[in-house]
Image 1: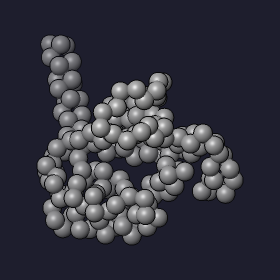
Image 2: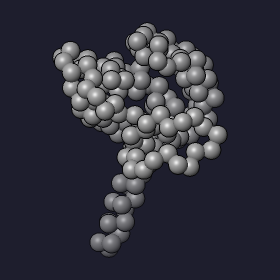
Image 3: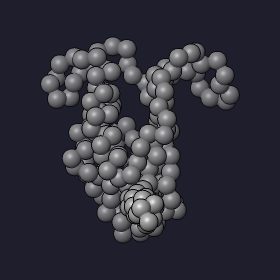
Image 4: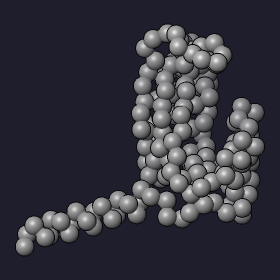
Amino acid sequence: MASFGIWAAALVLYAVFLAWYVNWRGRLSAAEIEALMTGIVAMNREANDRNDPAVLRRFLETDDGREFFMLNLVRILPDDVLDSQTGKLKPARQGMERYTRMFLPALFARAGHPAMVARKVGGYFDAWGVEADPGWTLVGYMRYRSRRDLAELVNDPRFGGAHDFKFA
């Protein structure tokens, strides 16, 4: 009888995990997209110069309600960069570390997680039909529960300051 309790507890834990990990809310509605995009554009004015909000809007409009993985190619500058909070020069890697410390807890709270992260260890020797090596430092493959979660993360005012670290 004790083994039944163990299996029942495991089943309950798995159900709780699935309730958190899977997007049960379905696709984004047009009204949700409009509200999210309004907030994103307003809150990320400086980032809008570096990112095209129309690309994000198209991505949200083609939502299928399923999880997705985002490929992040990161170039960490070898020189010091201006810290957005202190105004002092600091190693660019420190800015990336600060961004990661802010970003990962917010990602985990929305059932997202890194699927793979690796640093570049070799040259750019096998490139087909792409531009010259821009100097990538890291590659990250992040899992998102849904496009809604990504949009809500970008729209969260508690997370807005993290983008300054990312772009530095």
